[in-house]
Length: 426
Image (cartoon, rainbow, N blue to C red; front, side, top):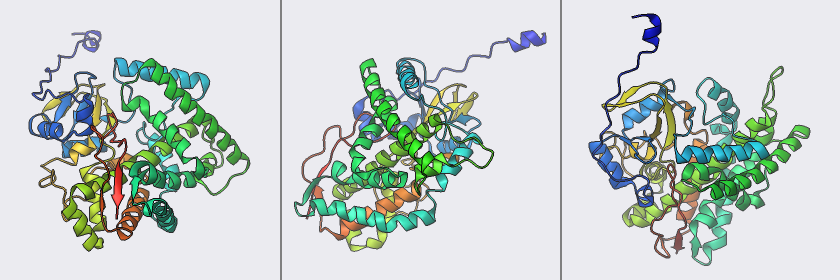
């Protein structure tokens, strides 16, 4: 056989993937309450190909951890799978590129060493020392929000507390006007929408226009910081280059803002809301935590394990690779399911039990793992600790003021955004 013939020899076809689990992950109810589906996958099919999208779900803890540590095989440089989703994402990018700045690869969608360059810029803001210095302000914001609904004894917890707390903190760190947090939340929702669910062309254009509004605002902020830097994250990014280096382009700055705004709002909001949900759903745990406030850190870690705010993020395989006995072809999109890995019975004893006294929850993957471990994890933990400490100290009991919506969450492939949650506090 000649070299030329060898180069053009077709690879043998991979065996067809057969999974006995037929529940559809595209079902809104399954996305909102995935645990029965996840439990079945753990038992029968730890690597599952979603028929409607071609995306592979990876639910095994050890396999997920290994994937997050091997970017040479499971790359973060992801392109959309073929089909409807890819077409909508292309349309979205065409609109942004034509009228503003199309997305470029910076923090989330790159592998080392490119990722390392951007990560260093962000890490300086979220050091343990800086977060510790922020704690008094986080406490003050927390208490000011509680003041607003303490007398009435009721609130819509998501919009009145869980969203504004992290929203105000990240807004202040960026150097933006905290009075505009509801505008920033609208922008964050629009930025996330194309990857959260399947959109129509009209919806794609609508969310792209909202993101363009955000981009125009941020471009003005970048220009202000170029002329007159201050002690905030936007200034740090605008002036992050060393002597002899090129500064970050406006497109790079826009993409970093996209990730900071979306990460700063949605994930901690979700963790706060689900934490209160768990204390109401498990009254014995609420009673235990009120009697033993030293368990607050255990409670936070167990809540993150049990209801992981980020349920999964995407990777792209660079070669054929075997996972849990199944071969995933090169060029496949794989969703590493953090939430499912955190319910793996091979890793966590009795994983469906919410137990703030367990001693095996420290290894949860709620913040990811490896090079892409969440840079804001220490800030999120401080916000959660400040919030739950104050809420417990300033109340005698939490309960639902009205039943949760059904399904309780908005449609999403990778997050668990709560629509609303009305609670009463006494």
